[in-house]
Image (cartoon, rainbow, N blue to C red; front, side):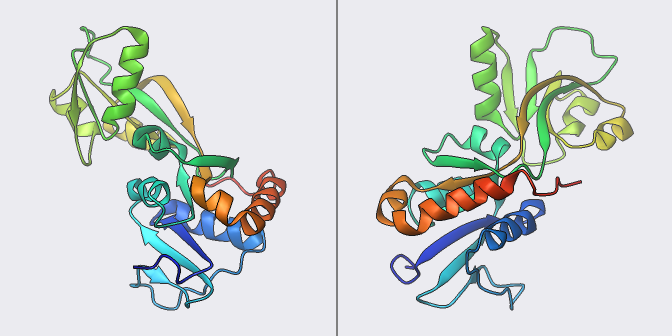
Amino acid sequence: MIRGRFTLVVALPKGRNFADGYNALAGAGLALPTLENERALLHGQEGGVAILELRNHDVPTYVDLGIADVGVVGNDVLLESGRDVYEPVDLGTGACRLSLIRHPQATGPIRRIATKYPRFTAQVLRERGLAADIIELAGNVELAALTGLADAVVDVVQTGATLRAAGLVELEVLAHSTARFIVNRQSLKLKRDLLRPLIERLRANAHTLPAST
């Protein structure tokens, strides 16, 4: 158990948002531990700030359930997770979008949609009064459109280069995503003196943070 051993536990995602999140928090004056062991999943000394290095989609779960006090994660992950976390700051980095994607020769009705975001996709369909089977995939979602497994896919798009290389087209942007600073609601009350100033500094710095490429 790590609860109570550290002044603050920060959940950061592996991959593109890790450095952005680390730099944003450090730039806001949070005394983060140095990352001495690249293979370690928990960084920090007892009594200080700890960093949990997690899979992207696990960050909201750790924050919601109170194992981590705060975290940084993309809005696309938050939309899919459905977790009840406080989301006070849009850091503005890691920009991407969730889009409906299809093969240009596919012109029939969309009856099956493949995606890594089944909850989000189902919500979009409900809001629009549409019906389609949703196929949950773990990766290489574009293949579902190329092979005919699905009539369309919902996936993250950054530059669109991957889609163009695969010969697919982006039909519609369903949601935009950037990295968000999230907070456990109980931690916000218990660690108010630490978190409120941190949130204000993050908000002040957010507009100056460089956008990820």
